[in-house]
Amino acid sequence: MPRRIQLSSLLFFFSCSLLLRTGHGDYPSRAQIFVYAGCSQDKYQPNSPFEENLNTFLSSVVSSSSQVTYNSFAIGNGTSAPPEATVYGLYQCRGDLHPTDCSKCVGRSVNQIGLVCPYTTGATLQLEGCYLRYEHTGDFLGKLDTTVRYKKCSKSVDNDVEFFRRRDDVLADLQTANGFRVSSSGLVEGFAQCLGDLTVSDCSSCLVDSIGKLKSMCGSAAAADVFLGQCYARYWASGYYDQTLGSHNDDQVGRSVAIIVGVFTGLAVLVVLLSICKKAMG
Image 1 (spheres, rainbow, N blue to C red):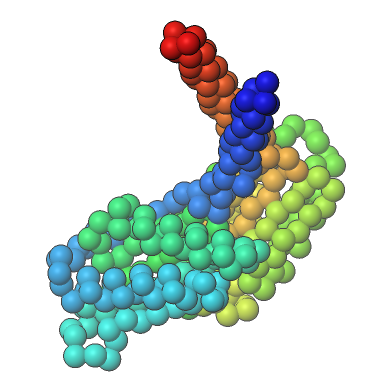
Image 2: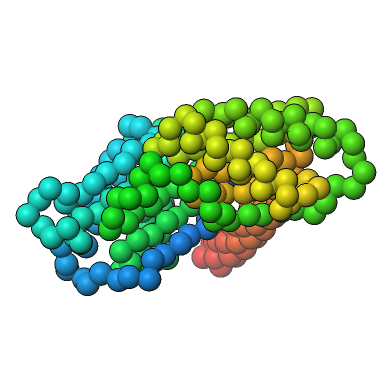
């Protein structure tokens, strides 16, 4: 009997530990979900001065992201290396990210950008929570760019006057952002952000353009994202993104239950076999 009690306790402890390990804390962060990327046509040669400077830039980005959510760099500028070897770049995290999550997001970007854009002299990578860009010239830094890089529109909401009133309230508030802003009205939420190299007036112009395009391109969508070259805006009906996460959570729970059932079955078979062996030896 004591042995059975100890075995039951072990099974209970193991199952609880497994459930905790497969709980919400282990899910991949939304901040690291891919949004879009862009690659230049020009390539650099392996082991070239440009590659050396690019590696220095990426290392600097990782180091800096644990301290600040935005930074820009010019690596190789003013050195004896040829001008075409200079790397200009920046990174930025979403304004509401904790520094630890910012660092993780930027680290993921650094790991992915070379895979998405191998050996290119310019590349851009946008994840949900952070942005990374480098070029071989620095003329993009601080220069207003309202080119549409990415848009996403959900299904439409029909004849919901209250929703559109709330949405317009949120978007009007986001237009006044200076850097990063979160806004909500009723069941509609949203946020917007400019890159840190923009002036206040250029940020305002970028957001006005972004929100104008968001309305014109996505119309009556329940949720919409528009990313321009140096800013972005997003709104959604409350719970819209949670529905996607919910189905992912259900899958995780289902897999966890299947694992636990399999472990219990395996241990039960083991107990039976040990009991048979004990009787045979006795």
